Image (cartoon, rainbow, N blue to C red):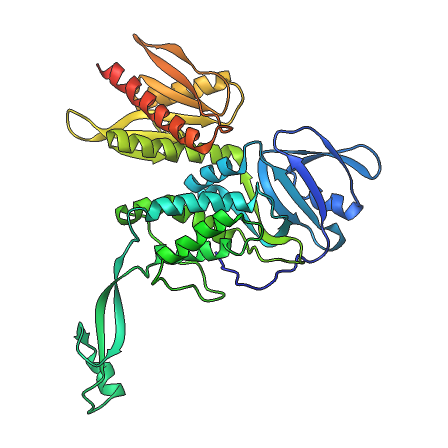
Length: 419
């Protein structure tokens, strides 16, 4: 991930704007031959159908976002608007940033309230929560030149730099400091968002308060890479904010490109993959907080056959210690489906998961539709396949509450069966 510093970025040749909607119908556009050729090179992004010699009907597939394609007179800026509001999309991305593909070439985007300001609002909320318990500190080994001893004297440096001179001293000591990678990343994202034009005064003030909270943290030099951080218990409360900060840093530079528009890097999201990753991590985290154990998102450790040739691919398997021997074994299985209605194949798939994992219930999670349960006879017993709904159109706070309720339902089904 490269940090772009504060300088204008030209978008190159004028781009033919093409705007489509996720899940929408056909939209007609007049396209020059080179522009058509550019779009035809990306069949995974959209469908093309001729209406006349120069007019084509376009329809988006399963990606959302904006990306600049082609070059010269064939340059096209393709924007696919998601069905869900931007703040919900960013809420999902924060749980699954690795499911977003970023493109190094800039696209143009007007500073509308439903784009970058939405990202700023989400980041401010997450960063405020992360810093609510205080700014994270850690120990850092520091080399310094001091008139008195602090820590240990670096004898080799002292002799090399000041032979025969008693002071000042070359020392090394451990400094308990807020100047750590996590805080540097938060500060860098905050400063970048402050350069977004069109932010309302309240949001800009909130970002400025974040910079004040991060006093003592170094500002990244121009052209430096965003700092790398390692998730752990010590920085768990920062995780959501750091994921959004990485999104900000990878998302491009928000300086004016031509006096009227912003230059941002292209970003594309495959919605069904994002939904699967979000559900697996969010529900797994909620289950871990509720009952303990170990969630395994995208678990690939199980197979349908004894030879291990046909892997199973559930989105989440949650493990709990067995009451008999303490060994962690599968206790729940969850699979997400970015569909409007359930299909019979989903039931077959979940039945296979339950049988191979030794579970009496499984959980299918859809992005819309109705909830229910299907009972499947297996041998002398039966298994239950629950159908849940997580509606992405709901406000993100309600969305988070829905995930918590889903985790409770998964746990309840398990405990009722065990009883």
